[in-house]
Image 1 (spheres, rainbow, N blue to C red):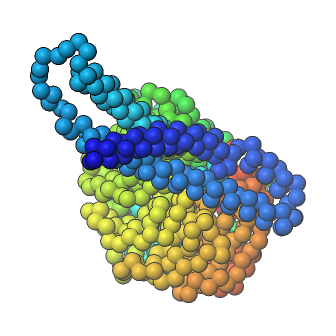
Image 2: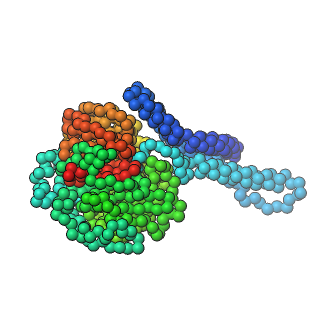
Image 3: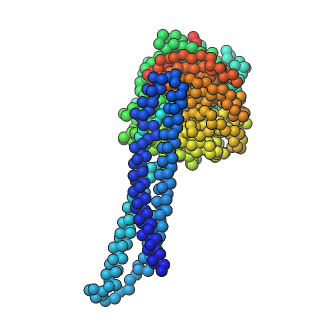
Length: 624
């Protein structure tokens, strides 16, 4: 009786496994071919939107279409993965049933057999059944492997617009002292507190670090000296260095906070006419990363299919000082991974502490040099398993370089010694693939390393990687980074929520979902949180209650992240239009003007200057 039950279960489960596996494979290829935002559709919608820029009803319809397409795609992927688990379970049932059915036939007693002995015939038949069952199991297992989306490389090679700045904007800036603690005679700290009150909580606690020292440039085999040995930096002139004591050491400035203590910020310029433009240079290689400024130097990267390069330009003149190519690195892939055009191989922003500068590329190659371009160390972290391309920016804390390594099947944080590249600690994460970048937040004067991910925002001790708290409140493709103010952490992703989290214990203070960012990272003050969307709306929320206070509906998309300086919010849209708002309860649009070049990167602010990277060039705005 039991044998009959086991046999029937095995037969039914085998039929189920084969049929279900075939259905999963068919569904997998259908999902794979229907990406959430196919390039042709996106371009058509963009063109339609441009032709009807004033039609708000059409823009809302396009937004809803985008929402439905993305939701349908992710629901299909979730269903596919659920089906894989069901298939594995039924395969296990089949194997157990078959095993129990043949349990008594493993050792057949030996006897003299007649050529037409019925027992021998049945024994042979049972062997065939066993072989057939094993074949079915192997076939089903093969189907499982083929139908599992997370085991297939480059499963979604489409041009999703999610990653444009997600990819290049999520950088991280470490605690570098010069922001306030290294002001000198002409710019005392007391002058900053009045005009930069909106940023005092995030900048004042920055860790004290040494002033960047200017050394004679060192020529190496890997370093290409583009300038004449950079003698002017060996003996910096007093006026130039004094102006640039406020640095922007990573994406969105120090600590990746989006807040700057910069003074005398330019408020108007004309790129075509050259008005208030100190210099403008063509981009040597493509890249979605943002510029970084330390002392009198500007850093950025570029990459193509054959090379990946870290560049250093002079802040005052725009002249190229040196470049470092990521080459001859053990473990570096012979063939570069596939990436989308809006991500590429140079999406992450570099990070510096004033003594070392580090850059990471979409190949997993990580290089670190001194401030004069001498390579200190280089390594490959592995080829990122990322269907758009690796985009998380670097950040520094004390003597550590911190890497957010959230890929398809491998999510972790890595802390490396800046001087040597040695691993100091690694913490495994539960999150799925992410394009966001880490920040350093101050909670009761203690630093927290805060990372966004799917499905959670999490905080860690930057000194040892210990997880402090974790809140599941995100979903989908997370590209924006977090922000913080007054001990509260704010994080949001499109189609999820904007969440305010108490940095002390990880409890949720409030949540809102009126307007959410896709790529652009929010920025916060004591009173307000400001969010820029990919469909042209910039919104202001009350930082304490989450109430939507005001919204500004503007033309264009926002992938660049807002920066607050001297009580104003500076924000580029993708067309290159600069919008300037008041960073207060009124949230007034103070000015808007076109620059003429598409801009996805976030500008770097320093005293009296703004460095901007576009698709075509890198330029410096000045008040001089």
